[in-house]
Image 1 (cartoon, rainbow, N blue to C red):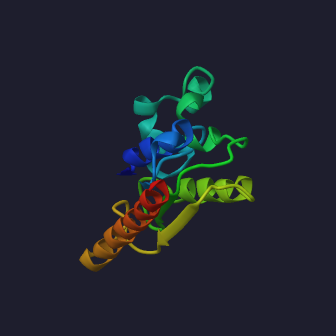
Image 2: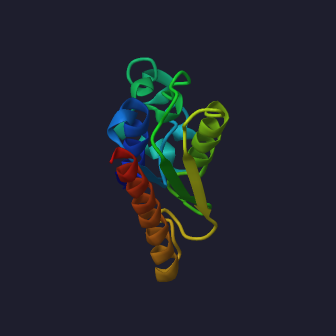
Image 3: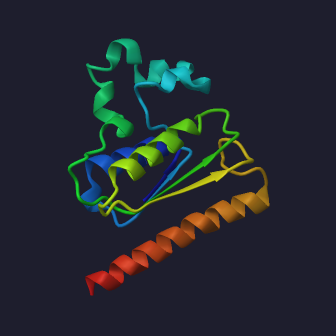
Amino acid sequence: ARGGSNGGLLMGNMYVMRPDLWGALHCAVPLLDMKRFHLLLAGASWQGEYGFPDKDWDAFLHKYSPYHLIDESRESYPPMLVTTSTRDDRVHPGHARKMVKKLWDLGKGKSWPIYYYENIEGGHGGAADAKQSAFMTALAMDFMFDTLSKNAKEMD
């Protein structure tokens, strides 16, 4: 599965809520910390859509905050590629950075294959021009093909 931005939030939730359903995930320019999203970049303007963390966290926001739903007791999660852009002016790259760091830290000694790429140019689309866009697409497609091919061979 592959999704970016709001679709990155979906990928994050698919990853933590139903990891058994996925052979590989690509989570691009994602929104992942629903407790602090309103403090970064354009996040404050999204409170009408997602909820107000200061008053809605206990009521419902905690139920779909991938960063907070990582299950430390799980022995495995599916392979996931997380991509972001340093210059994203909508979803702060800190969402991707801290999610990956937390997964790396909590997943030591477990089967939690997590990969990270941060483009230092571009914006919310993850690329500054057609060449970078092609690279980002190739990176994601290569990851998906390679990972799913390995999974298929293991299933034979």
